[in-house]
Every structure is written in C-alpha cells, then in structure tokens.
Image 1 (cartoon, each protein chain N blue to C red):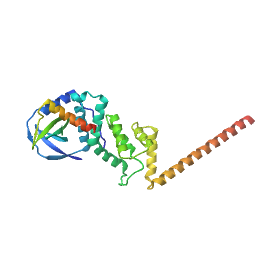
Image 2 (image 1 turned 60 degrees about the vertical axis):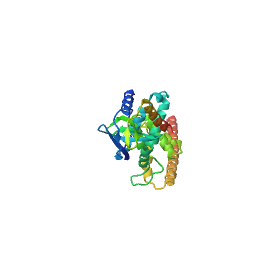
Image 3 (image 1 turned 180 degrees about the horizontal axis):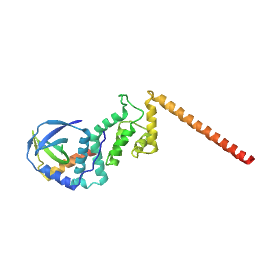
Image 4 (image 1 turned 135 degrees about the vertical axis):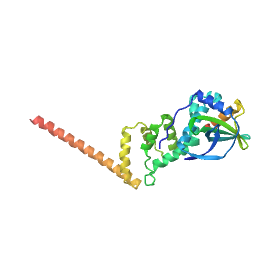
Length: 71
Length: 210
C-alpha cells in the first residue's frame, strides 16, 4: 500500500500522483481514485489549488513531467 | 499479486485532461491522505504518462523515445517501489529465509504473462534484476525470459531444481551435489550406451551365427 494525498474536485476524489515545484508554484498531477483515465493537472497558490492559467502553462507542466521521466 | 499494465490513452483522453486542467474553481488544499494499492498507483501513473506523451511538443519525439520516457518515469517513480515487493516475495521462502540462489521464476513468469504489455514488463523486470544485482549471470536472465513462454523445457527444469533445492540449507552443498549427480547420470548414460552397443553387437553376431 502507498499513502498519497487526496483532493476533492467537482465531487470526485483525485490522488496526487506527482508534485513538481516550478518557480514559485507547484504542479500537481492528479488521477481520479475511481476512474484511472480521468486525469488532470493543477497548480498551487499558497494554500489553494487552482486550474492552470493558459495553454502555455499546460505545456510547461507536461514537459516538466516528461523531463523527470528522462532522468 | 500480479501487476497488470493496461494500455489506455488516445487523443481523446489527452484533450479531456487538457480541458479539465484549464477549467474549474480554486479549492483549499486539504492535506488529506489515503492508502492505495501500489499496483493501482503504478498503473494510474503509467496511464498519466501515456496521456502526457501525447502533448503536442512531446508528440514530435519518436515513438521509441516516448516509450523510453514512459518506461523511465514508470520505473523511477513507482515501479521500482512495486518491484521491491515482487522481488521480496520472489527471493524469500515461505518461512522468511532468503532464497539467494533462485529467484521465483514462476512468479516473475506469471507477472509477465499477465501483463498486457509484455515487452514493457520484460524490460522492467530485466532492469529491476540488473539494478538489484540479483544476478551477474546471463543464464539466469535467459531463464527469466524463458519463463515468459511457459511450457518450455527450462521451466520444467527450474521447477524440479527448485524442489530439490528446497531440502538444502547450504547453497554450496546443493551445487556440489547437483554437479555430482549430473556427472553420475552422464557416466551412467555412457555405461548404458556402451552396454546397449554391446548387446546389439552380441545380437548381430548371434544372428550371423544362425
């Protein structure tokens, strides 16, 4: 068993599969506990979790995860 | 306990993820944690990585590079953790003593057999074995791969050897006895062949006399 952080979004539970710090924020890579194909990326703003601001930010978040995969 | 890798993702899942990532309301971070089965986490992470590699800029990479990224991410983030459990079971007897001579190839074979993506499963198993220094012997690796095709001769050989080894506490003694037995069998087989030849010669010469 593995312990993961869980976040409620739109009445569904998402686990944080990965968190990557970037500049003054962190990107959270989320997966629905009950539907493995339901995934999304969010970012932190202090104590809050917010949607990504733009397509560019989405690309950055994807590339950061991919870069980690190359290491 | 088998790890079953499922191939998900198409462009639709990617579009859905992109849309959801850009929409919605801010929520307070609750810092709540739950416990999840490791194989479920590994599978979900593999799905996430597969979807991510469909990102436009990443998508320009070759398919083999995308596969490498997914495999690396999966291994580094979760699979290594999961394989620790697999190998713990594969190298320990039921009574808890370490079986350092044989890995449980039946178990590894089952795991690979049950994986939808066999190439990935073989590659990750090979990598885990190498990284854990469980073998420096190419023969052992060949045997793991042989287990992916259950029913081959080496599988039967493995099972009989495993049964014999179960009675030994001392690895060196097992190796010594096995060598001795093999030599005896080889020598017996030579003697049998010689006797058979001798019999044939007798029959042949008898026939001539008749």
